[in-house]
Image (cartoon, rainbow over all chains, first blue to last red):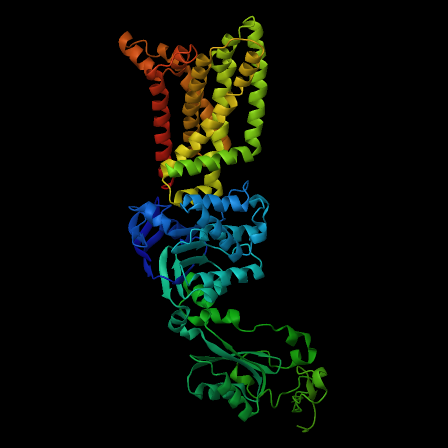
Length: 391
Length: 248
């Protein structure tokens, strides 16, 4: 349906889109991802024939958009950025105008108008002035206009910008429904949206195609990003890290910061190893506070491309829990020499720490980990007792 | 042709749906009415002469002709370019030239409608017993439409050049004034052979072509071609500029 080959567009010396090639089949929903200025809108404008390409060609439904422009345009429904509509007209009039532009017979047009209005849930607003519609409604009105001629190819430039979450959801649903009959190309910088709607993602960066494929493919390609996060209390965190690393499927274990009595681990693995990690924790008697699986979201892949970061380690610290607030607010803990994250010297501090007040006398700190004792009022950050051997 | 009709229809509706159209309508009615009554007094009650003054003979007519077309066309391209509407129109399955011609026709028709309010006075006077030369009136009105077409085309060219409607309007007024003052260009051409000078003047003198024929009630194909030709030139220019905009 859409064939783009070696598409290039320069504005003076600036190259907005650089040698872009891709192909979309009928019924495919593709998402254009990219930071502001990555070339999304320029590409879409070239696809619709509004902007001529400096080099390369675009074919829509078999027609070259520059050479057989009119035929190609008949197959395109385009929602430009900013949703241009004639504000002084009523919604129905605008739709009638679009129907006339596409040469729909009057009867078909009326039928289609009712259909698309129903589809975007604006049937009750048909007689409203477009200029008076709120942004979200206007957005949907624009969608209705683009949909009206029932085009083979729908090109939507940021169709969900300015919508509230519920409207966004309904637009998302609408786009997925449209995918059955149309080839849809959506651009957005909101990633979850693309992830939810598109079966194909094209990531643009500085006018070039940085990545392309299904979200799953992209994630597989960037699989180093997935990890199980474990936060637990255990006697020996370093040993625990070593144990975790021996689990089948684990690539690497990062021992994170210590939060109160808990230590955080990031277990890098391809698949969801939560059960294995949980079983290990149960066997070892670790008290788990958090066990979660982090999928390699498009967001992280995108961030890596956008910031041209190659190693996942560099992005990791931003996600690692660094909130030291509960620790600092607890005076007892702040006096304990456990502030460091993973220094081997402090390995045994947990089991046999030395109370700073009485350095000569080794004291065993016992934490209350029994959830039935004192219920939720118990303070996990504070030791239950600091004397004796009543473990 | 289909595209022209669709765009024309939309633009006409647009003109009548925005306050600007009605404000211009009001102004035209006031100016026309005021000057018509003045003309009647000046000509000593000669309705025919008054009408021919109102439709091209007098200066107020040219003031309207210079000012109104740019005001009508100033928004047609520049504002749509800014709002993105142009992107919509130029990706719709109609030709660029249809967009330009449709808009020009809409502006011209609107202006023709404004100027034909003079017919109201003619009808009233006839009802009161005056005998009128309707052929003469029709010719003058036809000429008015042709001048409107020319100035609206110029206004459209100005509108494609900028994204600010006001600048487009000023530019349009400026070019219109230049077009009308072509007669005074003769002084610039003094060094030329009088024959050459004459042939150049005949090709650019808007005022002369208009007042030499339509105001007198004569329908000369040369004058019709003159106005249509120049309108065509400017429409062509506007279309090309619209295309060129895509490269900016």
